[in-house]
Structures are given as C-alpha cells and as structure tokens.
Length: 126
Image 1 (spheres, rainbow, N blue to C red):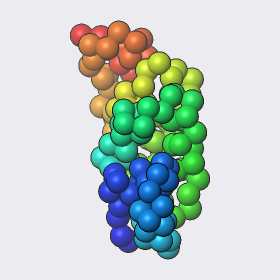
Image 2: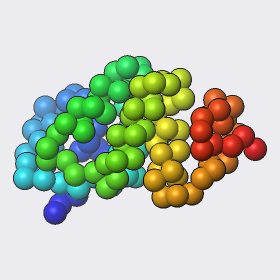
Image 3: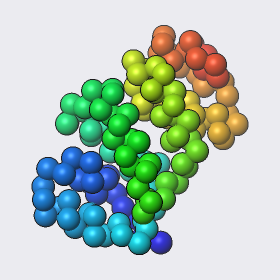
Image 4: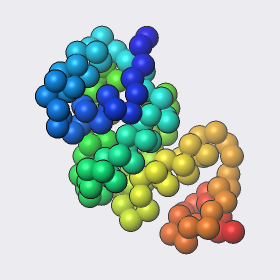
C-alpha cells in the first residue's frame, strides 16, 4: 500500500489549491496509509496555519476518518483522541492524541506539566 505525507492530508481538507487537491484525491484512490506522524502534523498545520477552531478541527478529523481510502496507522487511538477532544476541546487535539497513544501502548501514567491535561485519567502532573 502506498503512503501519503502531511501536505497531501492538508490538501484533502483545505482544498485551497485545485491542482494539488485533484492530485491528492487521485493518488489516494485505491487506498493509502497515513502514519501517525503525518496525521498529527497535518492537524497542527490546520490549527496553526489555517486557523481552524476546535469545532472545525473536529469536523476535519471526522471527515478524514470517513474517507474509505485512508488507512490510519493507529485508527483506534485517533478515534479515541477525537472523542476526548470533542468532549474537552480546550485540551487541544494533539494532547488528546498523545494521551490516547500512551494509553493504547500501555504506558501510563503520562507525565505532563500541562495543568488541564493532568486532570484526565491516565495523566499525572509533574
């Protein structure tokens, strides 16, 4: 199976360059693998560069998860992180993802200096 990088994921959501969007859509047909690193980086780009608000970001993640041609490296962690993010959007999706990846890997507690993140089950404020 082929794989895609951050830029391809971003183009699928942003659709701000028609030629790149068409190329991304064409390349993903038939299935592509999405690494956790590329996924997290794309979420950061959508939040930082495109200034998506938490609700818009949640919608973008849901849209990516609905794409049948995208195979996520750790889909269960992405879905769990999305659920947590939708419940607690002030945390930020990336923090939710870090916690859920640690949980899925069996490496809790997650040490953090983040006051809000440390309030969640599985996290510990240092």
